[in-house]
Image (cartoon, rainbow, N blue to C red):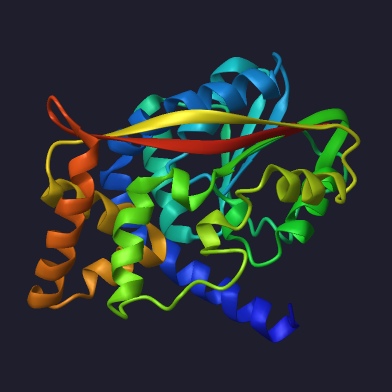
Length: 282
């Protein structure tokens, strides 16, 4: 990708993160309920020890990192980071709510980490690398700041067709011209859905051992209006496109979403399956 295109993508990602930060923070409980199996996998595989320093990239509200902070204890340290100031402030508020004291909050661009070589024992990144303009560069940076024997644990969304929570509304928005058709390998949020691609990027960045595993998640939604509201609050370009619809256009998308959700009907609304690709590397 040309330098100018990369910078344009970085700018777009930054603007999306800043715009979504307030609603992302408001939806923290919903997000963490869905992502609990992913958070547990990442922390188990990272296996932080007492006294370790852990860096969380693209932290959002920071719950994965805060659990790592509890594991490393008072003698350890978490560097909670995001390149969005609004997201980092949400993270800081969550840390204060939890009473986390061994945490340093820093604005960090994962593609240009302002830390010395071999500065940390572990790196966490949940749903961040897939959105970055140059994930290979970011992974090289993660390898650089890790100490010998340190680990990286990451998570990205699996294939769009296996994640109907996103796919249902995204397809309707594209079909009606509210979102541009995605370019290969797909929408940005699914750019690392392939285990082969993710493993290749990680291994190509200097990691000697890479292992991937799929982790299942579930979205439980009471009704179509809440479904559209959650998507609008949390789902990047899809969410912003929903927010910008006129009332007639939104009604049209709503009707199509309701039809598509019918196959996921459950006792209390809808239950949509999802798949996350997780990876650990050292």
